[in-house]
Each structure stands twice: as structure tokens, then as C-alpha cells.
Image (cartoon, rainbow, N blue to C red; front, side, top):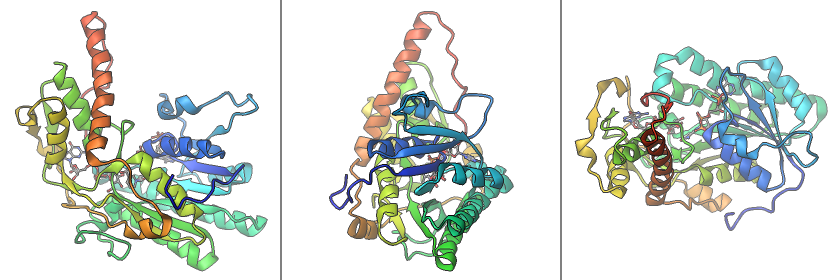
Length: 358
Ligand code: NAP
Ligand code: GDD
């Protein structure tokens, strides 16, 4: 915990949308560790989508089970209202999203529905719930550095939003509605503006994990080529575990406010390739092929956050360095590649989900 972290509140209830995602899984761990009862919203799917939280789940019949899952969807207002009534949370973390920037160009309307209107639906449900019950519910909105677009770095809370993707535009809408509900109705509604954060649990269609999965498979002879898009883009990459702590700190602050969360260091995709392949003694130049299908209609050249306000006010700072992030992801994916190699060498068919996309 950061030096300035407040004492963990006992017996509080949190409702988390997007609990099956990268951040949702780390946030659930973090909150359970601090004594919260955690209620997660999951989507009904024909395949299992709870892999990332399987290790946290206990049979709800067990008296000390503190993680509960509920079906719900950010496109379904009535379901969200019922959930608030049923769970009666102290804190709501809105992490659910169609979170892939490239995909948002293919599905702009759906992305706006989930990301922009989804946040509005939750805020409206909260406003109504709070007015009727008189209970204060603290609301966290998962904002993104993607909202800054090509505004000049370093980007801080004072930087204007200039989004360059349907996802970024939808996140700006959700951000502004969160501010609006705070000002118009006095809700405790706060925005985190988080820069890219990665982990061993990152989906394989984001560039960092796409690279660490491919580099480790190449090292073990399971793959030869990695197709990527723009190698010059620069991102401010941290570790997701550090960033979920920031979400919690934002809701423990006495006043609702908006905070940039970032490492302050920007690296290019090339630099990530250098680091990941370098750990394996490989030169990526012999394996990476640029495929324009991974280019975006509009790109953000450089994201580099200034989180000095979060540091001064919340006492938050990232612990995992860039090198440590890459090392952890490579070590994790090397284990997966080794298991795949062993199965193949034993003559077993290995069901991989096909080549990484996007
Ligand atoms: P992620 O791994 O893609 O997880 C997204 C979550 O949202 C999943 O649990 C997903 O459920 C859920 N979801 C998707 N559509 C939904 C819907 N219609 N209704 C309810 N839930 C839905 O994303 P993440 O990296 O954990 O990011 C968490 C949040 O932070 C997102 O809002 C993202 O936009 C934002 N953010 C992320 C970063 C980053 O670098 N990771 C940076 C800034 C902001 P399924 O598992 O069923 O698909
Ligand atoms: N995904 C992907 N796949 N990106 C690639 C590839 C590729 O094959 N090749 C190059 N890139 C470049 C992208 O063009 C982009 O400039 C950069 O790598 C990072 O792409 P992603 O990892 O997809 O992340 P993102 O920055 O677009 O979005 C992530 O961070 C946002 C915060 O800034 C997501 O987590 C968003 O949900 C989040 O809000």
C-alpha cells in the first residue's frame, strides 16, 4: 500500500462491472484482500469468460465466500437498477467496456453504447438509488489516456481532450457525464484517467501481450513470424496491479475528483520489442513483419502521463518498472510456451485460439 493509503474500511461492499477483465480481476483481488464483499457483473456467454477470476471464486454457500457474481450488461438499464437494489454497494467501479481501440473503428456504435451510454445508465441508476435511499454510493469511472489523443505530452488533468478513436470519444462522454453528475446532483463520482497498463493477464490482442506471447513461442520454435502494425507509437506502460490500487485510492479520497495515473515514461513499440526479445536472446528484426491491416484510421503518436497530482494528493506511485513489467510478462508466457512445447512433443494436438489478431 502507498504511504498515504487510508486504513482499509471493514465490511464494505463493492460492485464491479468488467470484473472478468484484466483490471477487474486485479481489483477484485485487491478489494477481497482488504475485507470487502465484492459483487461482480458478468456477461452471459456461450464460452467461459471467468478465467481471470476463477482462483478467487468460492461456492456462495460457504459462509465466508465474499465474491459474488451476477449476470448483467452495461446495455441493460433495468438490470443495472435491479443490481444496485440487490447489492446495495458502498462503492461502484465501472470498468466494463469494449476496450479495444482498433475494434472501436469497426464497431463505433456498439462501443458508444457500452462505453458512453453504459456509464450514463449506471450514473442514472445511482442518482435514482441515492435519492430514494439517502445512501451515498461512491462511483469510479474508468477513464483513459486515449481521451487525450494527440494533445502534446506530458498529459495531465489540465490537458484538453482530443480523442482520435470512437473508443476515445466514448470515454470522453463517460468522463464528462461523471463530472456532470457530480456537479448537478452531488454524487460522489470520480474519474481515473489511466494510461496503458499491462500484465500477465492482458488479452493477447493488445500489443504488449501479443509481443510477449509471440516472442516466447518463437524462442521455443512454435512460431516464426509476428505481424504487427505501427512500431513507432509511444505509450506510457505500467503494471495493472499498481493501477487498481489507484482506483481504490481515488474513491477513498474525501472529495470526488479526477486523477491522471501514469508512470511518466513513454516507450515505443520498438522499445518493447527490444526488451521482450532481448530477454530471450533474440533479435526481433528477423521475426517481425509490419502488416498495414493493424494500422488504425487515426493513431496517437505519443502518450506520456504526468501523475504528479495523484502522487501529491493520493500518495500513489507505480512500483513496477518498465523492465520489470516486460520481465514478468515474458516469464509468464515462457511457462505457457513450455507447456505447449511439451504437449506438442508428446504428440498431442494443441488447441490454441488461432493467430493473435488486432
Ligand atoms: P478488458 O480486459 O478488455 O475488460 C473489459 C471488461 O468489460 C470485461 O470484463 C468484459 O467482459 C466487460 N464488458 C465488455 N462489454 C460489456 C458490457 N456490454 N457490459 C458489461 N461488461 C462488459 O479491459 P481492462 O484492460 O481490464 O480495462 C478495464 C477498464 O479500464 C475498461 O473500461 C478500459 O476501457 C479502461 N482502461 C484500460 C486501460 C488499460 O491500459 N488496460 C487504460 C485506461 C482505461 P467479458 O469478459 O465478458 O468480455
Ligand atoms: N493492438 C495492437 N496490435 N496494437 C499495435 C499493433 C498490433 O499488432 N502493432 C502496433 N500497435 C500499436 C497500436 O497502433 C498502438 O499505437 C499501440 O501499439 C498500443 O496499442 P494497444 O496495445 O492496442 O493499446 P491502445 O493504446 O490502443 O489502447 C489501450 O490503452 C488505452 C489507454 O491509453 C487499451 O487498453 C485501451 O482500453 C486503453 O484505454
